[in-house]
Length: 188
Image (cartoon, rainbow, N blue to C red):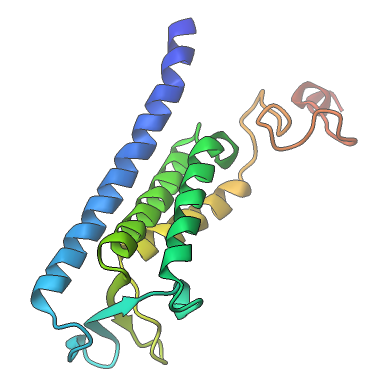
């Protein structure tokens, strides 16, 4: 049992990194194809008329072009977020498969957009939807980040497994009033 406990964090980290690298690879591959095939700010390629187009836009801001022109500071913020997420990953459910998937998607997405900011001096966006208005263009990295955050939100509603408490998982301080241990709860 001791060796299983010793391997668990390494396996968790490997799973997170695997998902992150897969997300990063898919993001960069799709952006490479867009850069090679679509002219920058050119005519869109209609995939589903009135609903979905492929475009080639550059975004020096964050989501929805917020903080446009702040590429350097957004790159610094992205790097800080990466470090924070990795160092504090155990607080984000890194011991569960869902948490590993969520963290991997977020980390891969952040790195994908960070690579763009450093290499292209803007984030390459290429997915354009109309729902019914023109939704801001985005990319695979953005999708990974949003999906990962959504999965973390879902995970936050999951109850601890039998024998665990939120306090043991680091979510509630052990001295919190009203915290009932599983044994006490079943006797009541």
